[in-house]
Length: 382
Image 1 (cartoon, rainbow, N blue to C red):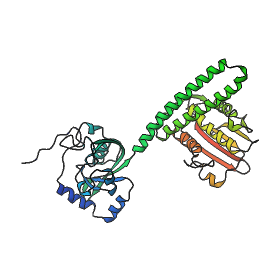
Image 2: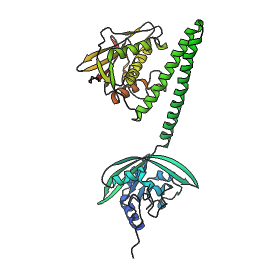
Image 3: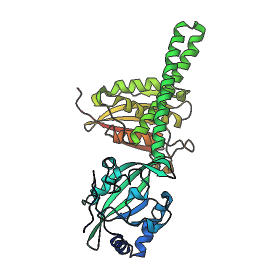
Image 4: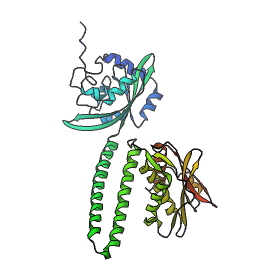
């Protein structure tokens, strides 16, 4: 009499016998070079048969498991090997409960067994020694044919630390911005009632506080941009008004002390559509970097030209950029200002190309100094 196939609420429940699994395991692991290569990967690597059973697992899977015997892994499904709390709720095992319909790992694996590459995030709650533990995984599953049989080659990346950092960043930015906003309101209230002798100091404090808030908002938006979570808002703006606003802000900034910041009289006044907040951040970063690069008494000039159907914003300073700096200027962690200061020009390139839909470049010579260019498309304004 044939055994009844367990019911399922999502993925197929059928399995093959342990003898078939062992034969498949021997088959896919026949190459020592392949085993060495897969075990050399930093990520956990699994090979699953068409019933989603493990026929190969890299050695580092054992570090995630409560059972420390490789032989016990063969024939299990991923959720069973990782002690997912839903893996044994039904007779069909991993993939067969209603909860599994929302599991990124099962979705990615099923997609690969249909001949397509699957990439999904997976949130898993494990039960280890009677205690629950949460994990966030990135699962990449790729179709893999070997000796006329279809398998799923699965790469598992633990992104729990990344998810925790993102949550902590959101809480930090939210609380800090709220607190700073309250201080700005308090500062405005104090200015209304303070004696004339204190007005200058209060204004300086308010400007400094506003600058701090802007720096926090800039870091918040950069963190969102790196994760593809930023949503650009395009509205009608004018090139000359944007530049006047940014120049006015940095003319009173501490970084411009004993330096000149000028707007080119040849700046074009053109209407176009883009995200004004990001554009001001990009231009502000360029201006700030230029002011920091020049000695006291020197001048930084900004402007905008119309070039071949696009607007070209530029920031020029008289300092030449050495070749070793030129080669690394847009790298994420590179800075001439010291360790851990390399987000300025990196953020300029990221925000310009990914969200403003433009390009960024620079030219530098001993005679003309250094000029950064931001080219943006001119789109019809509303």
